Length: 605
Image (cartoon, rainbow, N blue to C red; front, side, top):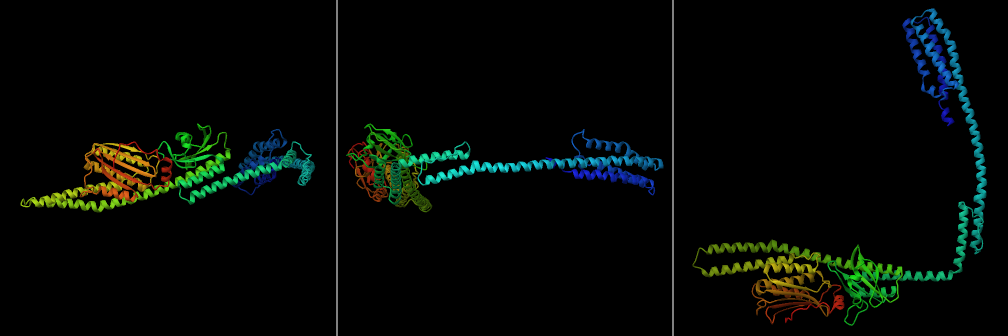
């Protein structure tokens, strides 16, 4: 503060001293008899202006004290008043009228004025010296305080830091030697005291830990073994699901590992379709005599799928069941129910481990389904390309032939002497029309897309389409909600049904059609289409009608059989039977056989 307030004092003193020189310079210009009137007036006015600028210079004003009653500011006001009221007017008067009397009067006032300016300069110098003396005093006081603080700090460092640290160091060396009865003496409220108190608590804890070290080692060993078993289970699960195809045997092996590590009685893995309200078992470790999972008889699907997260619920038998959702990227692909013995409860680590295994299984199911979807998409793209090629080539050729036959008929119509030619032309037109219709149906077949809606939705759309086209009452009984089919299998099943309905539309003259799909024992999927029409004739493949041949080819591509026969009560029965080749087909057949067969009217195919 003193330094800042002393800034500019030297400049103020210089300016005040220059006022003396400026006063004598003004007196010299007034008294110079060699100057003409105009030159003298001009020089005097310039010197007056220069004096006033120096007198009111901000640097000089900044060097004055702020107190109005101070001697320095009073002297400055006196100098300013004497200049304004006396020196300046007489200097200008002497410059205007260079009479000897005016000049003498002005020069007589200059000396006292310069003395007053000298007094102002002296006061400025005294004020600066006072400030310097005050600054020296405060510097001495500050130096003394600094020395005092240094000695006080050294003393406090020794008593409050060095000595407690030495005590803590000696205690730590004693603890290192196994002497747990030592205690730190410094336990005050400061940081080192808190450190000493914490050190004493630590020594007490170490003493207790060493007392029951054997029990803790056994506990940690058990926890380590538990962690190793958990890691081993996760590693084996990941390796099994990544190296092997996701089948019933693979998932059953994973379930047995889960039972062994977590300690549950039995387990089931149920897959879940987004369009279905319930799931279907694809792997189980405990089966009843009928081949169904034992756990599925004690609970319902909505109980396992209800919460959407890991949860426990009671069983009618008195036990408990842990339901672990199979989730991947926020999508639920199924659930893994695990049966607990009555009175057993899982620890948090067991539930977390089961949840981790469930996420791995969910990822495996998701990967399998994505692969199936990619295969399905590739198949549909290939069929679309074939349909486009057929439309661009064969359809245009048939259209051209129809136009040419029409032209031929028009030309032959002018010659009535050839009736046999007209009959041939009509046969050509009928054959071309039939070929064009079959081409349209073929293009419809190739362009058919299930698009992830599921086979059941595609079947319902097909039933609705043919019911509107031919006015026939069609009943659909689909029992395949728990069976996964490959893309080729879904397409072939749907096309066999469409071909059978197309035959009903064009040939059977039926009023009712029954369609049934179910999974028979032995992992055999059956599709049956029955109508009450006129029945199939002797020739199962009449001329220009290749529907039955196409259906048999589709059955052969599925490694199955197609039976077409007349029904005893009238009409035709078309039945397709094959074994699904999907990863979970065998599991679905084994775990659900006996529950999928529909209640149909007796049929003799």
